[in-house]
Image (cartoon, rainbow, N blue to C red; front, side):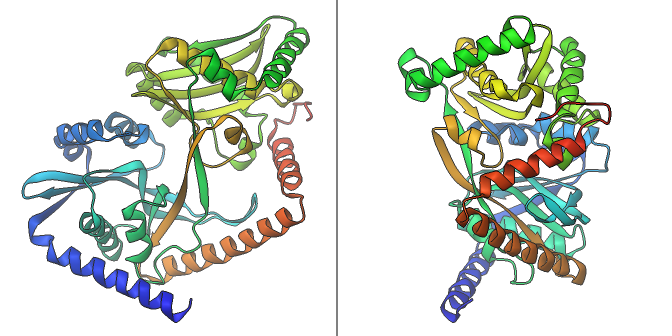
Length: 422
């Protein structure tokens, strides 16, 4: 780092600390650390969430409590509430849980330690934010790390142009702040409402190609292609069993991410069904269950959460067929304007996504030896992974490497008695 950048970061940090101390007398911070304290601030939480211009599903209080109470691991509430002159102004919604810090090169994980950390939920910084408030929220997290409440703080999917992102990447000391955060685009699709809008999203040629895929899938599957959407709690068992069978054949299983049939998944689906958010889709060809997707309608946004397809039917583009059927279903339902693809960038999201913004996931580490060493390991592997991605991209083989690596993971993860191949 050159001297000019060092001086600029030092000046930023001094400014943030100065303003934090200057305004502290006007601000009062409390931290909710159990479910009773969470319920006590429910009216404030719900009002703040409703006032957000784009409230996020993961920051909903009912989903938050379902996660806390249903996870197999021990999870503790950690919610910072900030009052300004006795008026609620901002909230940071987190959980103290076991956080894995994967140090990986591509899809290969070399070191995956688990530490106790404060995970800030996606969309979990709400209210009226300004530089002073942002600094005080981040300083409160740093103080919790110093006090031994956790070894790290993890922010999943921070908008890189947000004021609090700048604070979180400058206020912690050099050894404790995360370095080399990977920026990825977060994609959404404005759901087409008319034939004209649909035509702008999907060309006539693409429509013809997909119609042909649908006809061929119908022939191969021995029956009509249809999509069924499950909403009710009574329908969950059928959907979970079908989705689990498909998931077992995907590369996501090799990475141990995605749709997992466990108590937490079931609890979140049941809670979503009870609140009438649930949209659980299965794509059929005859009696064959080809693909699945599950998400939630929250406000005017459909948040896609998990999806997968049986690789046996890959040639028929089942993922795209299902996605377009979901666009159609959400349009017919009314009141849903946006399809949100969730975390991470991917070619299939770029295909129909027409709104995007950059996000990064970042860490802050406690000022102790082991967390600092973890930060060093993570920074080193992130640098090596970035260099590798650059090299394979320059060589023009990035997509080839990615495709074959995923195929290898899918084969390794598939059940021993499964004979499907790509």
